[in-house]
Structures are given as C-alpha cells and as structure tokens.
Length: 164
Image (cartoon, rainbow, N blue to C red; front, side, top):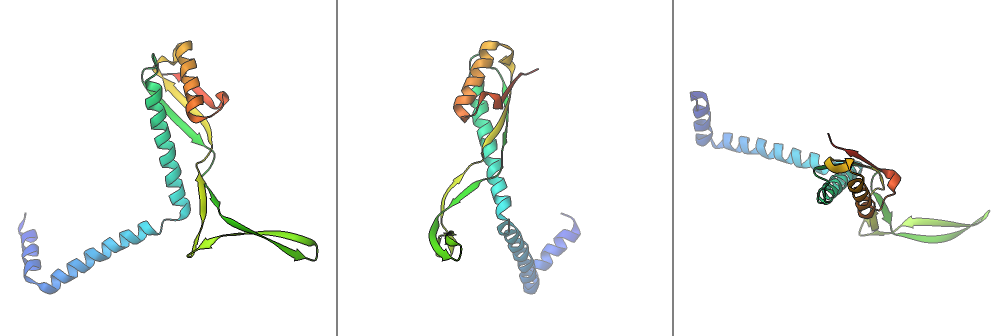
C-alpha cells in the first residue's frame, strides 16, 4: 500500500463521521443495485427464462447425442418460436346486451396476484446438429431419431451436418 492509501485508511479508522459516511455510500450503492435487479421487466425475466431453457435443452441434447455410437463430438443449436406462454385462471360470466348475450372472461385474482395455471415453454422451431460422425448414414439416422424422440419435433425441423 502506498502512503495515500494508508493515510486514508488511518483517517477512516479515527473519524466516526467518515466511517458512517463510507458505510452510507456503500449501502446506497448496494440498494441501487438491488433496485435495478428488482425492476427487470416481465419481458426481460421471460426472455431470461427462455434463454436458460434453450441453453439447458441444447446441453442435454449435446450430451445425449455425443453418447451415440460413432457420433463423436456434437454441437447443438436450437431455435424457438417465441417467449413463454402463461395460462391464467379465468372466470367466465354471461352478460345481457342489446345485441344478445355476451361472454366475458376475467382473470382470477387472489391476494392481489393473478392466478397462473401453467407456463408453457416456447415451441421448438429448429434444431441444428453438427457431429463428427454425421458423415455416416447410420450415425446420421441415429442422431435424427434420437432428436425426434427427445424433443418431439418433426424430422424436417432438424438439420444434421458433419463436423470438420
């Protein structure tokens, strides 16, 4: 430590007001950081969830496919249709109008929070697989069938390429 640093630290140790000021500044920085994190919009949180879901699925599929005999090293990229779909609990009421009966659905709210029945992960629209052994037709077919089974996608959504 140089003299300026040791002098500053010595001054903090000896000055109670300075100690309180330093602690207050550090607390303000911490609270600001926590506030920024808590103010993430639902779209950002949803996008983070989708990214994490895609990344985890890619990793699981890579591990699975690299275990296929003859596949060798495998890399996987997955594309998805959109973000998370949230299914809310709703109540349905029928209202009489001048044009006849009208059905109105309203979300059910309990303790100030909307009741969520389930959240659906986004639909997978494409899978790219690059594997060392994909040049072999038998390995190619095994990779393709394993992917169809694992992800419940159509064969035409899968592209398999040989790794260089």
